[in-house]
Image (cartoon, rainbow, N blue to C red; front, side, top):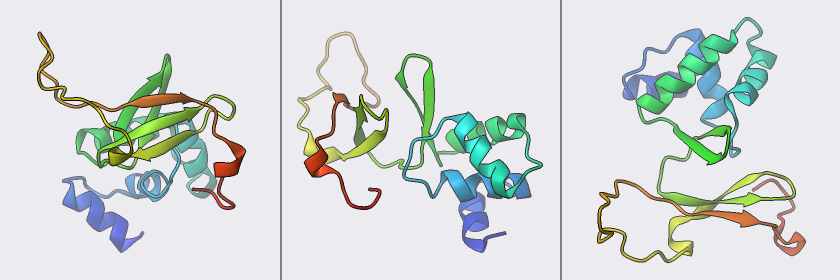
Length: 140
């Protein structure tokens, strides 16, 4: 087990079992925004005895302890984001890939004065097509 991952889990008040470390090893290091099933399928490659229920429960613990963000960016599609810093998202309609957009890249007006709403958190979700000229040579 990775000492770094175990320390990260302990630092968030999570007991680092072998299953939790296996899930953390994938989900906290990916730049993707995987669904719970995607996490389970990836973790099974190196930890074949992990169950779907354990994976789902572990993801929920990680969300509850602030290690992951759970996002519902499309109807019926829940994904997990290891980037817990404020940022926005762009969903490529061709590839369905979700890209992180830096917080400062988008100017949003003052949301604190919305009548009838107490805004605790917000993010902008953009949808469209990423131009081929902006695609990196390696995965971003």
